[in-house]
Amino acid sequence: MTNNKPILTVDNVDVHYGDFQALHNISLKITSGSIVSIIGANGAGKSTLLNTIMGINKPSAGTIAFNNKAIAGLSTNQVVGQGISLSPEGSRVFEKMTVEENLLMGAYLKPARQKKDETLEKVYSLFPVLQEKRDQYASFLSGGQRQMLAIARGIMAGPKLLCCDELSLGLAPVVIKDIYQKIKEINMEGMTIVLVEQDVKRSLKHSDYSYVMLKGKIVMEGKSSELAEEEVRDAYFGVNQYAKY
Ligand SMILES: Nc1ncnc2c1ncn2[C@@H]1O[C@H](COP(=O)(O)OP(=O)(O)O)[C@@H](O)[C@H]1O
Ligand SMILES: [Mg+2]
Image (cartoon, rainbow, N blue to C red; front, side):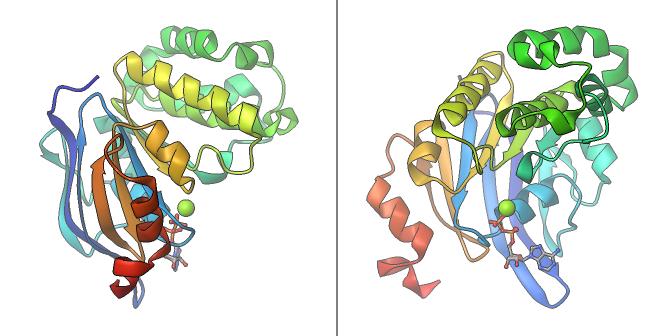
């Protein structure tokens, strides 16, 4: 479900941690209404990229535009206020809060808070298990339920763009399948999604467009249905013609 208009444009972005350069000249376009995956091995720079979009890391060069408005340099709160939210790596939730308290934390900015009852209802209909467990502490949730809570909390901010960092990490295949089905449903309702994944096959299967990262660089991109899995694997592992990076 895409209309070819970019909702997010990242242009020539570099990010450093001290002297270490984690991202090199990253450029990408996220089409409004699409699911885009960012594929890469551990350490490729995927989380750094999402955290830079979110304003957690500051780029040392380049620009980021969301709906044609420059957002690089904004605080995370301001980025969330513009309409981007993050489901962080490792399904991080607030363990000492109930499920519902966790969800309400996602709606902490005023516009989202004003709509919180409506959004909560939507989120509960998408994830009935969270409604069943609304009064339980998040520490009692299974891994899959935590991941759902992390996604749902992201949705509570009312984003136009939802970034998901490694949804499938550590989860059983049947749970992963369920979660990707939910992502599809969320996308069908109009939300643009960025998926960060380590699993090549899964990334290609669940996205419209893919970027492959290697050592902080984008080394391959294309429509997910047109990328050859073997070629993506070479890029991912930095072998054959990708050894030069
Ligand atoms: N806070 C940090 N300080 C220094 N180096 C970091 C920090 N976070 C990540 N890195 C380094 O940046 C590179 C990319 O990391 P990351 O973005 O977490 O990769 P990925 O999410 O693809 O596994 C790695 O070499 C990692 O060690
Ligand atoms: Mg990561």
